[in-house]
Each structure stands twice: as structure tokens, then as C-alpha cells.
Length: 317
Picture: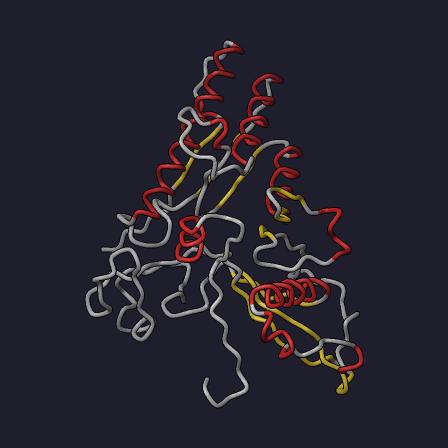
């Protein structure tokens, strides 16, 4: 992009107020996985106005991520994926031989007030992590011709949306109007609205819970083997509590959790192996708690009657 008006900023995961080792690990291993595009669009019936629209989801916006519901491994190497091959699981693979790496994920188009939330998140991250170029951001205001109050009633194929995120003040500037909703720990402000949304719905579920994620680990304070404090989210223990309540009350209740066999990347790498170990500790803890609740109630049941883990797979002849 040299010689153009495009500004590119490589944005590593920064961790302040910590040791050099932890800071290096955060910068080289982790990201915020915020994969979005923002742009302006026409306002029907008013050629003088523009509105903000956006795309956000879990797909990396890069090579090799296009996929279809068939998740082909070999059949499309010479057609749909001829010039779009990627396989991070076995990096030595090529598009001539395969297999390619399939993707099961979601990306969505957003418009209306939720697009302005995406815009605010981008601007506030840019302000913190690339402050030297903050002046380059285009002011999105009514005076600049943007219809900031644009919205419409959703049709039958559209949904009302609310965004959540998991981020702290190392990476984002928090607007003063939301500080009463932000947690503070060890000198950092945290927006953990993703976890709060999980907990909100877990506690209110009546029959079952279905979760898909690339990772499933947490509640390390309750693990049977205490080996880290770096997986503190309480989603697993909240799921256990909901199942334990169902057992105590004689309710039929199921939890289905769908995760890959291993996270994206080389399964032999240190980072993936650490995640897998922490996932096993999480699963072990959950099954143990549910088994104890079954035993206490005197039921003829098994923990998998209430909690099941699934891994999607693809076989192609």
C-alpha cells in the first residue's frame, strides 16, 4: 500500500503491567479474534447521505478460508479451491495433493445501530493501539453526511442483534459513559460482556443448552488438578450448576458442547497442546461434579445423560 492513502497497522496483543515473558507470550500467541470490515453504504431515497454497515464474525479475512457446507477435503482442490488453498494442521501439504483444511464458522452482515457499535469498537481500539495515527480516522458524524440514526424494522429473514466482547484496557479505550459497567482488576478495566451473556442464558435455560466454540476451557479454580490461574472464566462451572440444579429438581436437562478435535493450527505445537490439556482439565472437572450430583441424588444415571461433548469430522473417499 505504499504510495496510497491506505494506512496499515499490525496489531499484536499487548499486555501492560506484566513481566517480559508474559508480554512476549501474549504478543506472539494470542489475538482478540475481532475479524470485521466497516464501510459506508447508500441511504435509499437520500443521495446526500451515507450510512455505516459492517461485517463481523469468526472467519479470518485471508487466504484459504472460503468453504461450503460440504467442507470438501480433496474434491475441490482443482476447482473452487484451486487458488485458495490452506492447511495449517499439516503445513507441508500442498494444493496439488491436499487435504485442504475445512472451516465451520460464521460471518454476518450488520446494519443499523449495531454497525455503530462495531465502529466505536474499532475507533476505540485504534485510539489505544495506534494513537499516532488516530488523526487519520474519518469523523463519522451528521455534519459529514452520515445518517447516524438510520434503522429499519427487521424482515422475516433478518434478526435484531446485540454485540458482546471480551477485551481490556490494554487494547481499547473505554468511553466514560460505560465505566460503571466495566470490571477492574490489577489496574486494568475489563469488558467481559461475552461471559455475562453466556451466564445470563445458562441460568435461564429450561430444557437444553447447545454451545459451539473453537475452545472450551475455564473455571480453573475448580479443576481437580490445580495447575494454572489463567483460565478463570466461569462458563463451565455455571453449566455444572445448571445441570446440578436440574438433577436436584428432577428435571430433564441436556448440555451439548461442539468443539473441534483441536484448535486451528499444528496439533503438535506447544500452544495447541496447552489448550488441549486445559480443555481436558475442564471436562474432567465438569464430569466429576455432575457424577457427584447424580450419586448424591441416588439416580441410576451417567454424567453423559446430562453433558455431552462432540467433535465434528469429515471423511471423504
